[in-house]
Length: 395
Image (cartoon, rainbow, N blue to C red; front, top):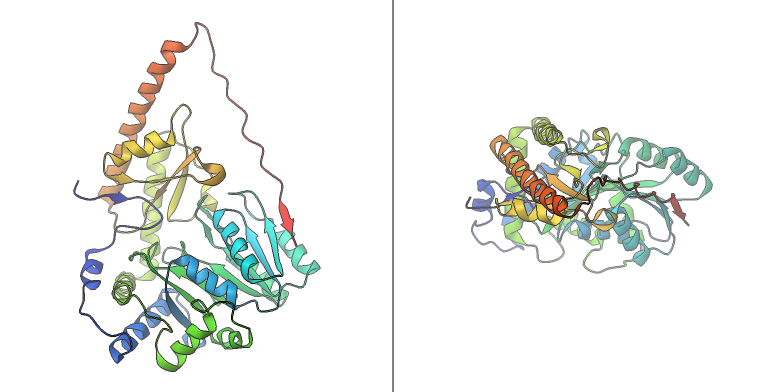
């Protein structure tokens, strides 16, 4: 093959239309040309989120990865209030670390990676503490788990708290109902389910919440969300020099989604995930989390006994396929297969055949090695699964 197939949660293989868009003519970002480009992107983002009351929402675009958008929220929204971070994975932990830098009154409810939240525990915590902001990752990429927005948003609203969501890897593939789930601010990025190049992120939120940000002392210069909103509202501009070619590409990616239809796109991504999961189950592979809890963009697969995740990854790379290895407590135990970006049904079938070939080759090698050293009559012993840690709550 003349290219890598990126079966990852981002970056992704981009559409050919984006390759043309990123090479468009040079413009000055302080001219009306960029004003129009930014306005077009904002309107397309509101359409992607399927917001009914569009006049109540704005979207600022930041030159920086999804982490930049998250830090803009966490450094700008809390002020002197108290924030509760909900964490069940790597990116929940990142929200917590970021919040601790900017907010002295950061609370934490933490459960083991890949474990669903106990909603009753969250509600009890909110009842017992005066919390002003609740923050949660929608899709926890380290496990592939999709966390529930509706119940948490309802609990935050009932306690008078703002609900902010890290939608970095879910927006563009999963429904994020800003209005129905009482979400004040949601972050996301260009290079994952939206299908564009890395380097841009954005924050979408209610106007009334954006307006209140100016009452908070600035904690950063570059990522002050109040400044981004002021420049957007008064000038249709960004406060800092934007990566203009990436803005062209993002606009094209959003146009591609809207041309297909948001609902149809979500269904197509889910169909790809289903096709992959059926095929991998036929190879006797097991998944880390229940399929009912999975996001539609990613499947986290347990590494078969006697095989190495690095060998699986290297074998697929030789066939021009790129996957993720597990991280943190999942390192060496899982690999991850994404299904976003420009991947066709043919690419899915090619991946499944390649995976089958790699697994059979590695299993044959492993069997040969075992056969030469196993004493006669010896039996294999299955080791017990590691014990999960208890829920951790920090105030």
